Image 1: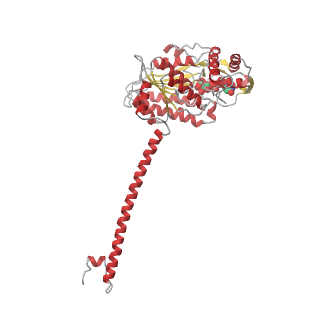
Image 2: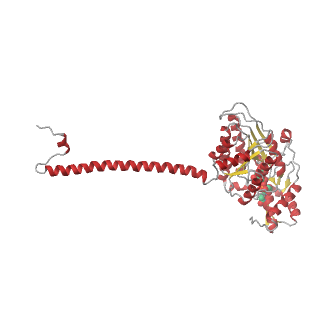
Length: 433
Ligand SMILES: O=C(O)[C@H]1O[C@H](OP(=O)(O)OP(=O)(O)OC[C@H]2O[C@@H](n3ccc(=O)[nH]c3=O)[C@H](O)[C@@H]2O)[C@H](O)[C@@H](O)[C@H]1O
């Protein structure tokens, strides 16, 4: 029996129709074969195109997040950052100030720049309160040669880039979600800034070479329900009354961890109700001023048994001195290459005024400065995170860097009212609600 040839296998013959059939079959097979090769080719092309477009989309998203959502990057930008961070005195420092367009951030940045330190600001300009006030503070900083980079603490790439461009010796970390009562409205914003943002910043600092020393804003609110007065740094801080306080307390523990593991020098400052020119519109002294001038009622909270609430109101210039004193005495971080090389300082200081004033008395002072009577609406304190009083013991800061507040509430509010009227005018020309 004749074995079928390969040709026969491929093109089985039908007698009488062979030629035609064979030609037809060959044609069909050729087309099938050609069709499958070209289909494969097309598929391959399609896959290559798909992969290429996926990759370029990814890089578009990557660079998009950098160049479109936050305006940073490029040679010109790096030059501006470098100039701003340049030190102009011997033994000076270059400081990254987070929250630079905030109330305390603006004042501290100006004070550092004025004495010849390099300052680069970072701020996300969020709308927790009127961003136009933050923009005005930014303009003020710009006019003193301080660049404020617009970006979020959680942007690790931006933070790393800033440390690439400037070898910061210090970080003054003031960016935070502030406000005690707002924490019930928007709890996640506190986690985003005060916890996640803090960790992102510390991760950058721990990997930086050299590592900077870090001074950051904690809060008097960490004392929470502590009743022992005045509040000393060694007192209990495990009974926070608000989520804001809890995130600041968490910050104290988180910074301890980074100090312990990576040798970062850490100083936490417990600020006591800071007030003054360029202040925060969400705070009582500010919103009271606005309402009194607009003839609107103000709500004054009252504590248990109709007791007045009191705060150790601290003037901004005193706080600035405390911040600079902390930076100057911070000591060095010891880590390098992300590893601890020895113990580094870990410090916590109260920065208060040491003389609490009752809230109705604050209103009396404002009435005198504004020459307008307030329409007082006195209500029982809602359970919204407030504490009945605060009172700082400042002996520790006094001992270590000579901290000594010199501005009483009467004098400080006078300066605030003068600024308020020059900025907003009697008729609130800038339209703050
Ligand atoms: O030391 C801090 O660590 C915190 O200080 C600040 O918090 P507080 O001390 O709560 O300041 P602030 O709101 O001005 O209320 C002052 C007083 O007015 C009372 N108060 C307030 C509002 C109101 O409408 N009526 C009223 O009586 C109120 O009950 C209180 O008794 C910062 O905002 C905070 O971010 C944090 O930095």
